[in-house]
Length: 367
Image (cartoon, rainbow, N blue to C red; front, side, top):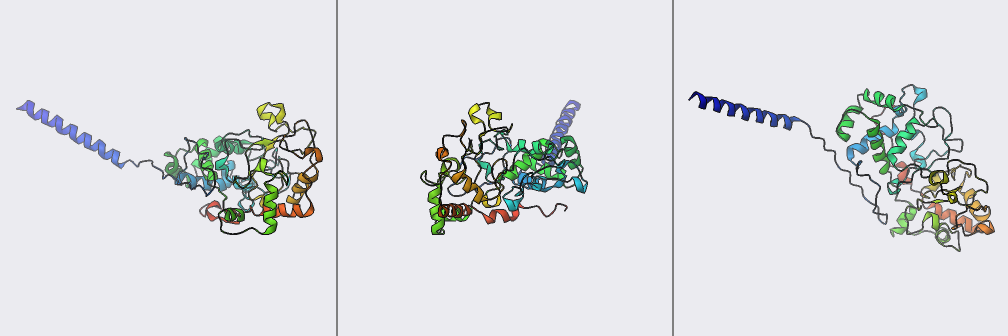
């Protein structure tokens, strides 16, 4: 009898313990961020650059937006030492700085090696970031910007410690990544998620392609010039009506120079001598807002760019074969053709993108 009672007690104790453990499990909050549904605009490519180790989530994007605009990302709190991604990537300039060289420059006053590239539609960038394609992930651009002397000139350990002690952040890091322990890895992942949502797809040209409106005669003439070899011959490097990104994401020596001294061209990455003086063909979306132009910002206006391609190409052994008019110094556009080409380029401006509230600074950040 005593043995039977003892066995019942052991069984009862086991059941109570098991139930208690199950209760504890039920009380532990589950890390389950909400997947962000990315909608591909009509006519855009369906292949997206979203790495498996950093899927888009509502919580991650919200966190990334805060970090993108938080001046303490430099790892400092003094008003004279604040700097964020948005210090140079300004929404009103299609997330580019919109200032002539030597801008942009960092906290130390050192200018960046090149002019800026806008942060627009880079969810379609196939892992070739920067003018020379040196960076392969958006995530890497974040920590590189934090430590670069010509940008934030910060220390990642200092950045992590600072944000760990800002009450706003540990809880939202936990919601986004399952841990309130703040790491530079997760800071980079969050900002990269936000940047991948910066999509421009509602310019006048987009609405024309969707059949919602008509371009005027000058804009249509410019479109034809843009997309034909006998015209301005732009489409080989920047895509045409069938390429809504308006870039191939490839690298070209476009006939700007005959002497090459820049140590950060595409050749510096590939070691292929034929990449000497070659740089990324940038997107022409929102080109109205993203001057100065070229890797070194040598042209202040679109008129100067069009004039260059019309009359001032420079031959070198490294000039890309797609520069079909190199031997004649340019495509030799007439005055009216230049006006038409510019009119078309201005149809690529997306004013909704540069004013979209969800791309701007969050309301709960300090000034």
